[in-house]
Length: 113
Length: 281
Image 1 (tube, each protein chain N blue to C red):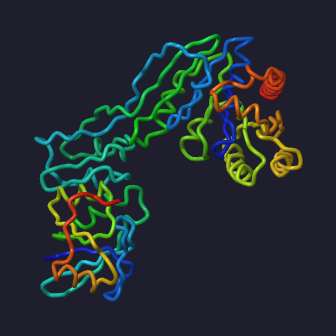
Image 2 (image 1 turned 90 degrees about the vertical axis):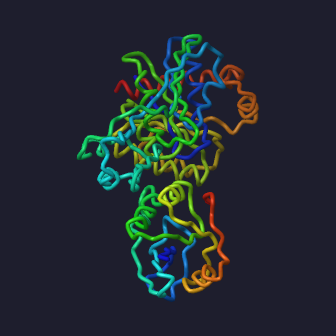
Image 3 (image 1 turned 180 degrees about the vertical axis):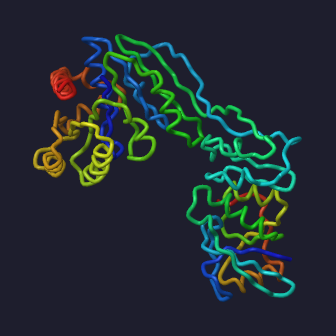
């Protein structure tokens, strides 16, 4: 599964960033292979950052997103596009992916910010 | 003659000065009064009640005709405000983000987008004892404040005296409010915060080349920073309203103090004479 996480830096040791729309980078992880790539969040300083950030992830064809905080507009875009939205983003990229693997992250059904 | 009352900082007494100035003027002659604080209009509380008429305010937003749409995504790409998202079989619109620029409509390759009106607020008007009053109300959840302010200002009289009460701050809504006025009456208070925001407001007026005069509210002797700044900038101080418990008591009961504390009528008479002198010059 291709899953996106909002993160602070463009490297595999990076800590996550709990802000969805205004995080500097997204890590895109392939859970089967463990491969991780990064995309710059060009929406970070925009008006309507959440909506634009969601569009960036749609272009990356991710199937799921792990978020800390996500607002109503970004949530609606991801939800309507059929992505699975997990809450509970925490610590480093690896810690968050491990929690996902262990089934410890719950799916968000409403925005939380 | 159009006079706008503004401050930079909130809570300095804009509405207090504006309503008392209007009521004092209206005891001699007709005056138009516009409350432009459409996010929190409150001037009407201090005026005698009248019968209200309502005029709806709308803005243009896009509507997608799905039988023409190819979901190419261009509309979302050209939207500078991120109001549109194109999915595989659906176009999501966030109408409150839309700035009605029309780019999506003009650039859609299959002409699948049309304009439709969305209600964002209301202008209300009433008449009472020599006062023609208008204010605007922005609907809860909407953000297009300047549009509703512009809708109130469409009712500006061609002649006579108009007093406009601006919202606090120095952002888009204040620029929309002060634009086109002949004179700005700055209401400030002698506090560090009052001075800090006053400086921003004066900077804005300089950019707009709008002449100004100042009212110091809650005036106390010895607190001179605001007065020194006014002198430095060449802005005349036209009135000093003392830090008076009686005024606060009137305010908290929604009573205009110029009507309840007769000694202040002369202060507002004098204030108006000075404004007329400065604008006429």
